[in-house]
Figure 1: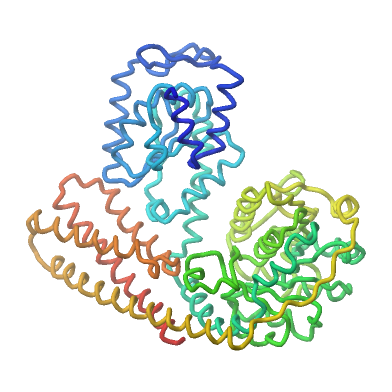
Figure 2: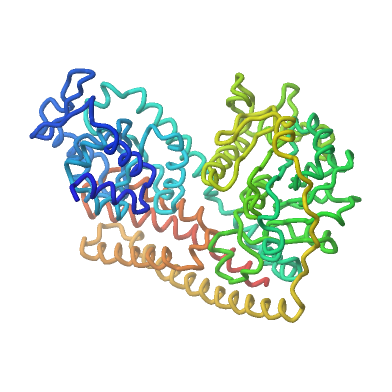
Length: 604
């Protein structure tokens, strides 16, 4: 096995299979025609008739030194261009992760034929991105959303491998930088540094457990209904829904209908009975969607953190309360009731539920994610008002319109949601075909845009099956599960108390140091720094602490530490002192949030 094959094998081992397959396909069918590499490892570009490096050794050393000086103690860096891989290999030992973006497949081939990066690739020390990949933004989002990266995203900057790249790839670099910044914006907003919403929904999840144990287990829905029909329609309450309702009524017996709660009243007026009605709201505002409605023929699917008032109000109907596919919910071993990615918007839940049930054709209507020409945010007849989103005062922006015809006005929450949907659709493209039949609003990538009429005529040719309503667990079984759940909660309380005590002890040590009006010896400061690292390790490896409720708090930790790293403090004594000051600020914040989480546990 030569070097190139060894490196490709590393990519194919689960690190980056699409890139590995692309490189494998290239070497089997093509040869490098634009670039070649000489015995000194300099690369010649035949298109521009230039060498990549004017003075190879001098230029690589210059970029090596300047990047190290610019990013001391950084956990990761991003570089455009793989070059001959020498710079990448030399830099990789200084960072936990080195992200490398490259647009030319031939340069990947030459670089990976030159140096053995297989170990760095397997251990994710070096992560390669194909900058021409259609799903590049999805790959970046996946990486940037990981906790160890998310914490330090404020350190992001795109660096370059050689002057050659700035000379010939400036447009690509600027485009990539804009994409990364946009992805960072979404990741940081999702992190919710205030922790207010995650703490609220955590408390509601704990309150909902008794109701969930009395509801229909999600696994019974799957066991009785999965892979029994291919065609689903997901109904959202966007402005374009109105024009689709008559056709939906005509075809309602030929598709399983997943209805967002906000669209329920519009369907009811047309005599359309949805198979599933979904809600994940943490507020009780959606109670109005369900009042005086005939719900006996539908299954009401709720996220496990749905407002408890809503669940209590609807408890006499056919309810299923679904646990999210996150550690927070999986750690309680209530497997009968999970697991699914319910997302942060109700229609996201509709798509993932349709996927879980094995539907192969998923048609979406009313999924505008934009204002219409009259400024409406929702369909005619929406209970809370057709222009309700104007009251939210969210920042607006333009995005590509459905069909690629110009642009439409959206707001930041819709835009973030659209990006999440594109990620969902891209990741599930082999499981189902997604048809966007909204015929309005924003374009959603990784879907096929097709009119609702064409979708119906093409796909909806068979009657859907009729199902019995699955039964809930026996009282004896649900009682036993509740006892085990409460035992787990008791252990979590004890764990939270232990971490609060440890945090308090560390806080007192740090305050003692910060109260001194003189600089303490480096040897002592290094021991304190190690104590902090040990505490961090305990936090980062504990199942209860890392269940994502306090994810935003850890993002805040990274931001405060990043602010210190950006100062580029060379002197170790001064660096540790600044680090201690930042960590003390974070520790106060963390203790406050952990105390709130502890109080939620105490209410169970």
